[in-house]
Image (cartoon, rainbow, N blue to C red; front, side, top):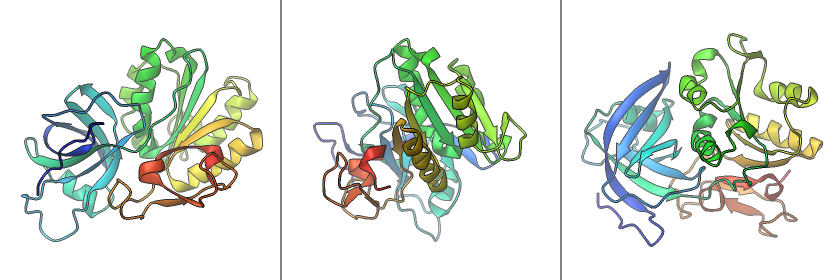
Length: 281
């Protein structure tokens, strides 16, 4: 496998090597990789396509690259990714060891539009949907807006609030919700959001953003439209290429929205972060 030289924006396929790995839940881990030719700083919400380097013999099964939000960037040449082990692609990554090589194509897609520091922000995450929000929280904290940035983090149970200690260590307001009631609010993260808004503990004039399973995002979109909230969503759409060739990640758009009359957008190049008004109701 040959690497594609980065273009003027730093986008390209790079061979990276694994420098660290730590488990952060019963079925998830944080993977750190290093590259020789890092791209320039990126806004939170952009992503990478990641797969084992083709020289590995991993046995039968596909090793098609999978999309992962850029989780952290502990150094200019290092990137981390929050990986939930779900299928053949993520199992292949799980089987790798320190020093092994991966194919890494980044930075891809469009990230969040960060509001000015004085404006409050409320982030809503479900499961590994927390991945794009670590960098978002770091950006807000660096801008002096950490205390005006809330993360509402929901999961089925406490062990699946992945890497919760790392989020808590950021020092920004953090609220949790679990379906089983073993951590934080007993119920869904959207129930938590409604409760906090109705009690006046969250500002309705904030910028809201969500990432998580499809069901959560549909419910979040309905909730924001009903309440007239200004919102963005980061879609977890299946992708094949990550840069607009395969058309596997099309999403319906609102013909009256900012993307115009074209009825479909590609999540990989037009997203994965979309203003809510850009998407079809």
